[in-house]
Length: 234
Image 1 (tube, rainbow, N blue to C red):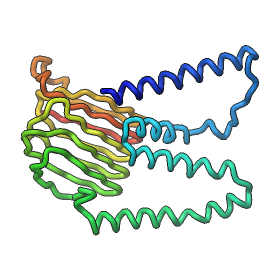
Image 2 (cartoon, helix red, strand yellow):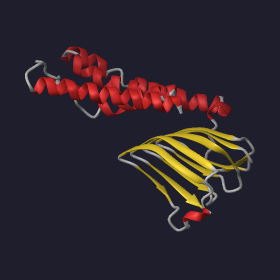
Image 3 (cartoon, rainbow, N blue to C red):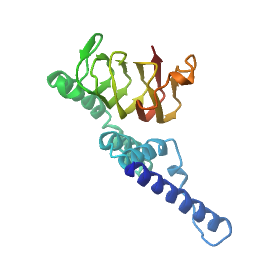
């Protein structure tokens, strides 16, 4: 809760300071111009990365900021330097290959299982799917949440036979992928997800409000970028 308050306080100060600076410029009290090259789609991963770091989600924060920086760099290079910079693109293939190799050599650390459903008795989920998919069924009676990262991949979580620890927190980062969750109909799901050209759907409308148990709270937080999350209740 304290971390969320700090994050809210930070973004409030950013907006207040930004609004004040632009007001002063509009009335001639400040004279400055913003380089057009800074205003682009690259601000999106940069803001996401900063927000993730504030949530102490360091891995996703570093990845998002790195993406923004990599695409910003060419704007500040000369034509000759850009030519040399673009020659580095094979490093992307090397990075993807190293990731696949690491997943093959250390499967437990990545917790990625493709095209088969595994029954888990752990009380948390930890999955990272990069151009891959996983399907897991949890039977724990003390599910605490965890994290799911999907980049051009997907994840299926079956929690219909699990029980929930109150205020369990599931952090997600979905980019050009998707996640499907099957949960008991009485779980009280609270969404703190930022969708960017994506969406989250909780199919609870067919159940009356008195079905939801207020003491069983699952908090889903994170980002959905050009992807989706679907929550199905049984």
